[in-house]
Image 1 (cartoon, helix red, strand yellow):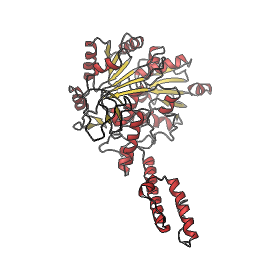
Image 2 (cartoon, helix red, strand yellow; image 1 turned 180 degrees about the vertical axis):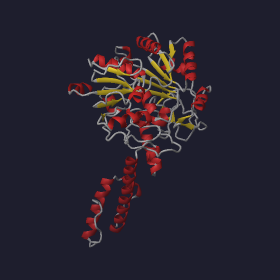
Image 3 (cartoon, one colour; image 1 turned 120 degrees about the vertical axis):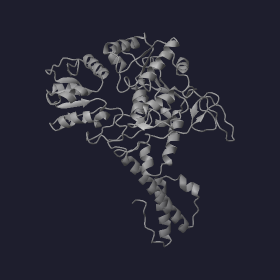
Image 4 (cartoon, helix red, strand yellow; image 1 turned 60 degrees about the vertical axis):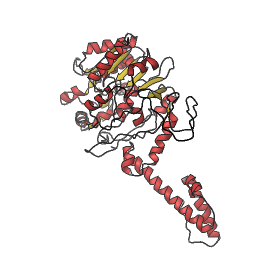
Length: 475
């Protein structure tokens, strides 16, 4: 898009919100031969270039003195609802700028929609399709039992940092992160997401004490040091980087390093109520590996159990999912799963373990959890379980709490009402026609079969002189 806009003699601004993204975008533009300037602190401004890579912080301060672009391409556009972004977008739109937002997760933690800033959402291919067609890496997820966060309060839409930090530091609640990395991911290039700077530093020191070449980065780390550590990481001199938010949204190790290299493993050591944050963090490891290996996700925070799998079908919309203000619910509900006592695999309740074939006893019994032991999640079984969770959500608030848009929730609920009406009609006609149809068989029938049954029964009744039965199957 940038190349075509330049060729048309127009001006385009590619906008980012972090210095790492500024540098890696510049690296990508350079690799593709796109001449560009910068509108960002620390860079000399040269407005002769039709393409500019911009920092949103600099734009906010200089919005009235820089030329208005013909096109703007904001990266991570789900931030569009924030006041600073909105100020820039609104100023440009009033002056004719066309804005094309990019986001893998068009959803805000505060539940507010993006429809105040964008007119239409153009869905790209799903994560499942991208994995199936080789554009993203497959994955394996190992997760512990969900931490008990019942006593942790919510602040600014997510868990209160000080409280969740104390919970995650408690011995035994999430297992030994270092031991499990050595067991599952030793020597794999790994990014660890911590709760806070102190938590990140403490965890980093644990890895160093175990002989792992680990490093910590935070917002106060000098830019030169950040870049050096990233390059050492890409070359294998550093095996693991602990951070809080620096390497979440949009981070591309290859672009920053200047050569092809991928992140092999992500450690989730920060519980979050944000579906967007969870998916963005996992996404760092989903770039295709040169050796074809799968990404490894070590979830010590219980986020997978709360938000589901990365390639799960999700309906994205510009509409908000919650009203303004008030307390926020979690994006999606916890999933109920079973834990295999033999291999520690996690899956939906079944007669046998899909991983090792362990046969469960027929009588009900409690599966003992092993604190701190990571277990692999079965994708298909978790999807089935989450579909079951949708089935018990019987009103609009419950559907919204699962992360559905108002439009999607209304459609699902309307379909249920229609199906119930069709079943009632079939039951009524069956009784009138003197036929037998068990409740079990009736519940198995899908709407199309119910409509066909109504037409069949009404035809029989009309032939027998019951003209009062008018078809509702096609209404």
